[in-house]
Image (cartoon, rainbow, N blue to C red; front, side, top):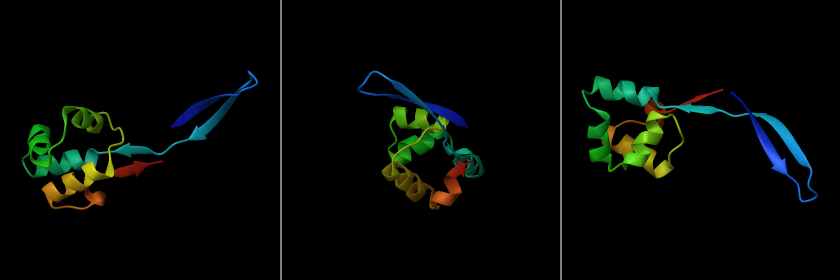
Length: 87
């Protein structure tokens, strides 16, 4: 997905950069939850996830490494089982 970065310079000029960012997907996590018969709220309770973190996962936004470790520990899986990077 292409994004633009606006860099406001001290001299008043503006530089716009076009860059490519990798997106993150938790679709594997949600499929794993279905396979295990769990709901997102079940995972949140067991992995001690806040409502804000659960919302980030649902919106395919980044979460902390600590959060991913707790999720993997709860589901007895690895990062590759729950996260996918998309170019």
